[in-house]
Length: 399
Ligand code: NAI
Image 1 (cartoon, protein in one colour):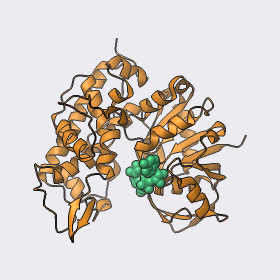
Image 2 (spheres, protein in one colour):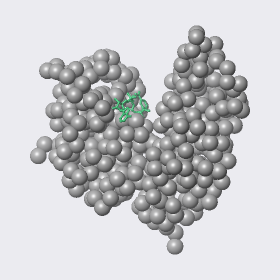
Image 3 (cartoon, protein in one colour):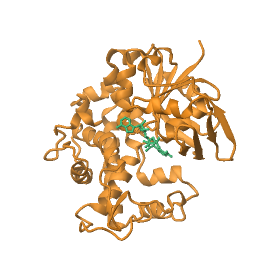
């Protein structure tokens, strides 16, 4: 049968990926979000989807179908999720009854704990499937005419991806590279725990929000302008970010201690992540703050704000908190609790952030809140011991 790809989601990234893959492969776009699939199918009609590439070239293609029917997973060789991470669980769950053994399921970006969520949603079937977590999205992209036209603004040179089980890495990454084309180059990362703890969004987004809008630094009054997000990182915010990233590093060292031959090289500090990903685009790399303040890729990006009577109040329900706390920081905090590691900086950001997004995750510093199951905290997926965590992650314990 013809190699069949499901491209999931309906936002900027999913439309771009669908347009790109459909040029060469049988591609079915799937969205379970409200009536998005029907709307998209309507919008495109008989026309071809137009994708503009950074050089200005235009690629035209037509997905085989645009649907909300999960049974299309029965013919899929590869399923790619290009949606915000809070939606991953729904796709895993709905596809599970239909997927054939050997299906490659990739998430882009994975954020944290995607492999464990996948295993928990697929149950017994997970052992026959291949999960791939990408550290990020390869493109900066926007649709220009919803459902019909989109533009790739830039493509990263490299992106890291990890495969569970590790034995399927060569096969899965070769297929994914073929799908993406020559750029970006997909680089093999040793394991999905490394991808989970590398997740820069879980530090940067909640950390910078805390640094600007928590009672420690803000009086609650509206601002004349939306502050700059990255260029506006000050000394206080830097101490928050450094505290968080250092706590994650302690967690990485702890995991290396308890696991057999676990390679955590890709779960680097936030500063190292900037050096890896934005080399040559930062005028000053002497500190974390300088990397963020002088990164040309971030020029002019502002805090998410809402205008109120000509002034600006922060949008504290924006995905910087609503996505990155549940699917990022909760994973790190939950795992730290399992291994008995204190994380005072992460705790204070979590405590403030969970109130902003209206979730009860941590209670008295412990991961026992009633909304835990809405997060990627291992505890929310039924995992409360190190042994269970290592089993779920397919990582061998040290004997
Ligand atoms: P988007 O905001 O355009 O995605 C919206 C889509 O998400 C919707 O069309 C729908 O399919 C789904 N969705 C939204 N709310 C939902 C809900 N409540 N339940 C189920 N599904 C829902 O995001 P975009 O731009 O496509 O990005 C996807 C991911 O890639 C995000 O995690 C983003 O942070 C990341 N990313 C995007 C970049 C870009 O240039 N667009 C660059 C780097 C990362």
